Image (cartoon, rainbow, N blue to C red; front, side, top):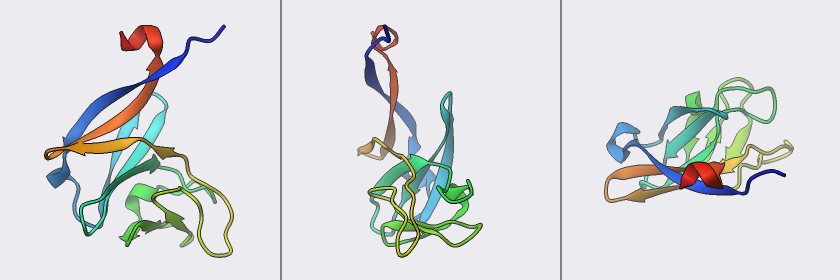
Length: 115
């Protein structure tokens, strides 16, 4: 039987560490996660892998609440992870929040590890 999962909130840095309309890659045991900051300081996190051909979304161009993949110009909605326009596919979104000036990323861990 698999242990239930819980979220562990991990401080990944200051919001000032992420440029406006930019991103930072956070390496986790389950793969890289891209943490984005929009022009109005909203913060989003999704797997750092485009659903098209695996391009590094953290290196893309942020516009509004979307990012354009640097490889083939797919546009990914940062709120849902869904590809926009005629493209189909979805990047996994990750829980993220800010507390004061800190960015906290929610990482799933087994319940016994969270205790």
